[in-house]
Length: 168
Image 1: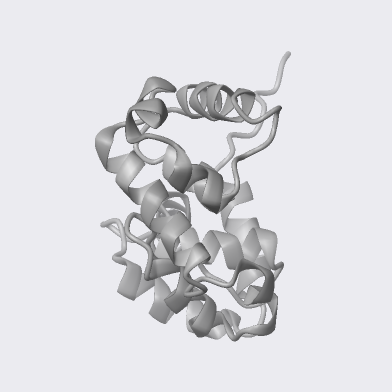
Image 2: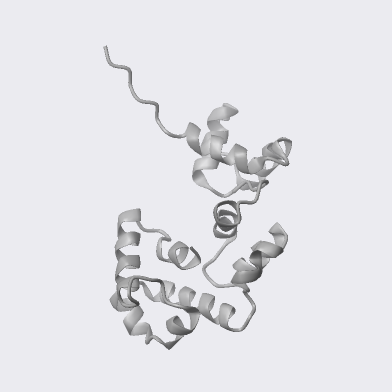
């Protein structure tokens, strides 16, 4: 998930899936291990469609895992803040990625991805704000949803989907 998060930064889902597909093709249909990523020549990573920065970010992630600074297999035992700290220590991975990992992969019950544009837009509409709320404002508004902010997040995302138009 973290590798895919880096691949998908600032590009369409279609492009991200294509690049991820080319990368996994080189490894028999699976994502490479951290050691395999580090063993690849950066030019090989660029050849699947990754930018120079994304190659650096993937290598940073792999280095953190290999060095034991990011213990993927132990993240489920850590607090939310400790998970965020470990994930964001790797270049190219920020708070949004850490929150998505906590919410989707670890299924934590009280995660509100305050920097997510969909969440911010839904909060703006729900509270009839005349501006897109900042992450700090979303965090303050979301305090009342504790300890169920993950559920609130899913409802907020669902509210951003357009309802089907009625036909006559």
